[in-house]
Length: 231
Image 1 (cartoon, helix red, strand yellow):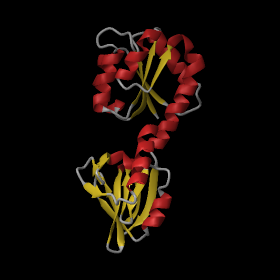
Image 2 (image 1 turned 60 degrees about the vertical axis):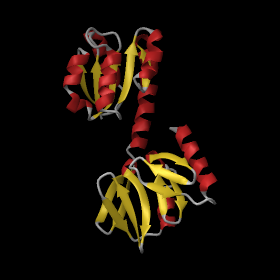
Image 3 (image 1 turned 120 degrees about the horizontal axis):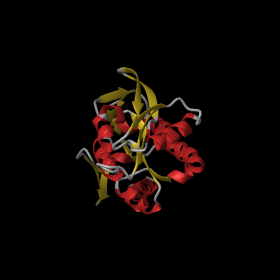
Image 4 (image 1 turned 60 degrees about the horizontal axis):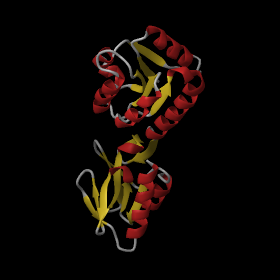
């Protein structure tokens, strides 16, 4: 996994890098002495799993740098590192994943990295199916919904569609626990793409509207509410 460390203190960068090297994982780590230098290497940041940012830096500080990164790389996990606890609330404003104190890194870094790696594994869940188009591996997050069409079920993704001769009941079971809700016999919806549910209509972020049967409506609403609460 690729990691970036941004801190205007060379000693602090070195100390954090040394701790990461003892973690036991094969990390590729790049160091940056300013937020400006970091943002100039955005192609690398887009491939990173974690970016460690010092808050107190000259030029764009860690908070401003975090905002810039999140605008282009919303899925990157940002860990704010500082000597001052009073910046913690500001970290939430820039959607930082974690906030660590420099004096406590030896005690807190491993738990922090463990948690983020677990989140990354969940985000990168991949499923494989024998589609009409061949055996294809798909990221769960890329599946928008599955719809029954004639004798096949069609996977709608960000890029294209895939067809499979498999019962919806089987697909629902295989994707159980991955954030999907069955609204009736013909639709299995990835709840990440639901914009809203009201008046027996589900609206997806793509703009597609799907009617929810009255008999299923309370359960669909319940599952979606639980899903949003767990995010």
